[in-house]
Image 1 (cartoon, helix red, strand yellow):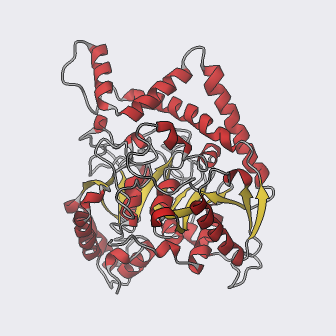
Image 2 (cartoon, rainbow, N blue to C red; image 1 turned 180 degrees about the vertical axis):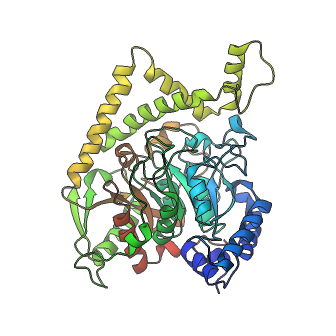
Image 3 (cartoon, rainbow, N blue to C red; image 1 turned 60 degrees about the horizontal axis):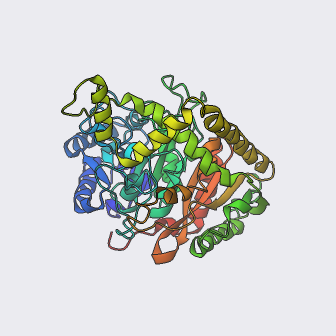
Length: 495
């Protein structure tokens, strides 16, 4: 049998179900591995004792035949989800030592499916960043090259999967924070349609954009995790009321007219000309084109389409997201929970000093931008106009979906950059989200699938975007690609 760390979610779940391996054994093996690779900075908290207790319970359920579909599978959660058994910091000094009295819905659903949580994962502070360098507890490091960033904000989640510390993790995607780190670290990640996964218990950054999703080795692993973590939640006003989805079954369902050699026969994949600009680096372009060629071999047809407002996505996002952040983060004032400054003169002084001390530079930057665009005299000129353009960006996608079933392109213009390269120029990191932001603004499902390597041997992901509630179609295409190729099986040297 393979070593535990070489098994993905599906393979490990099957081994546990057949009792070829116990959850306690798998958990102990991965806990040891986490300790050995502590320098990667993937984890903010490791719950060793709690994980072993949960693993023992999973083994009892498996033995009794009462286990859930993911019983005993070790995973870990991005530290943006509140957890009753572990501290939650959102990567911020503002929440240092905070413990929630309840679990986020996504966490509770995965617990109910039988997963064993090993701990909480590093992330950019309040999920604000594209490199995982904004965490108050230090950066996470890309296991393919530790001098490079893993992407953000779900950088710790991506590193944990890529370094084979756990087979699957949870992430969140506001403007690309699942897809971009998945691309940078050579793993698979999917952001479902906005509302498919509950946001209850997810610490809010931008409420109209934040969405939960899984990160794992393969499309099959993501399908299993997404099936467990999705579903309607009456406690979340933005949760979509639809029946539970079996994304794994949807992924395996054959297309009409498909054959074993061409499982994607009849699938139309749109290539927006705006996703292949002159600024796209040659190495990323070559890897993405290689992935597209494989999809063609599998029966898909490539068609040219256009998303004319792609360039507007960056200014639109960086008005709407900071505006919502400035509102959401107003609750962190040192009164009810979280950090409070040690010395202050009065209530107003306590507010000001607590927030100045507790928030990092990027969070302060976005709060100030958001407060400005929502202020009297500027709301109509900035925020309202941005919302109008957001609707037009969504309309562009619907025009495209009249001519194609999926949209494909790069996830980011480059491979992962070196630590510190964007430190003095935050707008440079903002520009890296050019290809992921349009789908986020439209609330569409999207995923990153490994399709090769670029400069320095760094991974490159292919982005696939589907129409609303077409996660099954996305996963089917990605799974077909991964059945025919082995890019997703590559692991960093020495890991």
